[in-house]
Length: 218
Image (cartoon, rainbow, N blue to C red; front, top):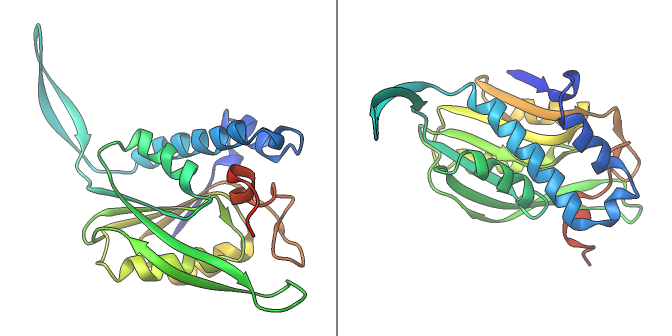
């Protein structure tokens, strides 16, 4: 099991994270979604370095040349609805990938909104058997939604490799997900924040990713 935190590197991702966290910047949903998407593209590029490659000959107007191309069959899955722009960023990079979608969301289980459960009601995905499975979800707070998604996706077949990709994670969420994952898996984060508040929101975080991307829900 490996955890890679992009925040530990000085890259342009830090600028996108700054803007995502800025409460004034968040007023523009288009720009917020765009930065989530751009982080997805950057993270997908990093993930691409871990794939297996095989040279293939291409014919140009002036000759031929061998270029190493990915051998992996990639399956990109996302947790609805907050994961959609993040997923789109990955799809810009892995444009030949198969795609899957899981509706796994948390629900408060007490009146004070301090305890949460996870409900999974929908999945549309091809088999993960033998593929490089990428699961995208911007927020890894309690880890419950991601763990539920991993469980339902693994029922479709055993992947060759699993990559869990998020924008912000918490130590608590990472521990929950680690328990749900096989040993041969990697977790990618653009930042790991200290923890959550009483209502299970990441602190300092940036708020509810789904609401900031698409508007508040009932």
